[in-house]
Image 1 (tube, rainbow, N blue to C red):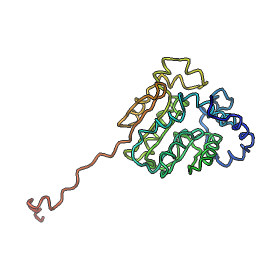
Image 2 (cartoon, one colour):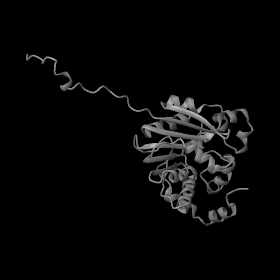
Image 3 (cartoon, rainbow, N blue to C red):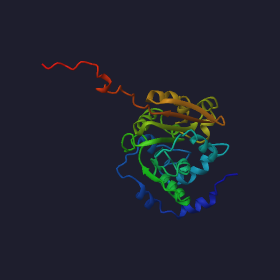
Image 4 (cartoon, rainbow, N blue to C red):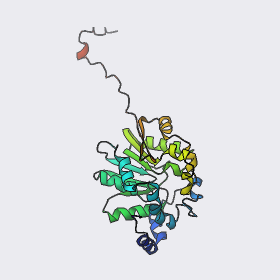
Length: 270
């Protein structure tokens, strides 16, 4: 049985002034990429730029993350080490992982970023219901507008199967740029090996880019983007987590001090 009260969700959706709320959230300067604006996701005409997509996303996604969506999202975030100060969740959708991040790291500044103001509105609403202070930003994952080295952790849950593989390197390059040295990138998505072997799985949710994703290799993409300490593991066989770190700068030899070289002759004057 679904853990979401879909009738209650539908009543809520009908009570929202979507145009007003999305105008409040949307960045008017943002230009939507063609791969996003013109695509149908989950069989919904207009894709994620519609109230229908925002309202139906959580009821659909719970079936994409068996055996339990919350368990999967929590397990994916377990490798995050230390106490990150700033965390960015790329392609956050309705903020399900973003909320988990804030709950796991309550003292961190957590930002959810997505291309759809409709999805961001749902994330904002869910955060308010749980009294969680989260910032929401309407932007592209491949061009966030944040400064270099401004986040300790960057996450992306269920993002890479929803973009063309040609866009993946640009998003990974942006994540690399945004991370502080030693910062961590965590990616949760479908297991590429499983999706490639069982092709009917790629057709269930009507995802336009998932077959190309299934034929790829996220760990190889991370290596090419410059990430080190890379790891790949699966959760319940059907989910894949990829981790990488931005390298620390190479230490340079310190300058030789006078005290260390008192026995060296002084340079004779010219």
